[in-house]
Image 1: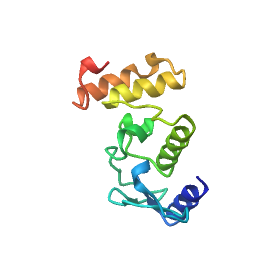
Image 2: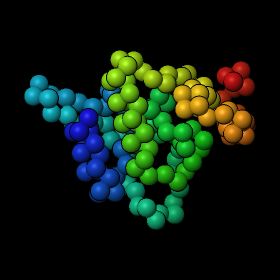
Image 3: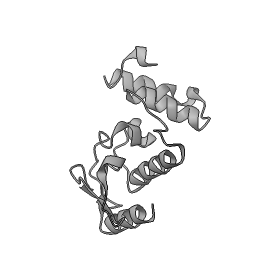
Image 4: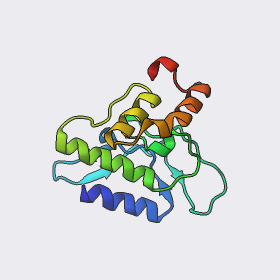
Length: 138
């Protein structure tokens, strides 16, 4: 975990967001040295940038709630959310919030943190209206 956080700090301090941190993108050699791989969704990042980023990044199970809600302004926190998901998986030996759709993942995330779904209903309806989910996924 320390190697992963140090690697991300290296990227973030140089203005790079990985945007797809997940177990299959972490490579470990026989000596236990971790390398972060697959920078295909990576993007340069500046805290004061005014160009919006896409919210359609990061594998669903590791996607931060702000991305599920369609945010186009984000930073290193989205990579750190993914790291937190990986850490939890290491403790429980299984994915902590699997889901087939953005809506089901959002509901799983809200219930895991005891967030009332009423506060997210508006955003869920917007996701459905944008065609990113079906009403039956609720």
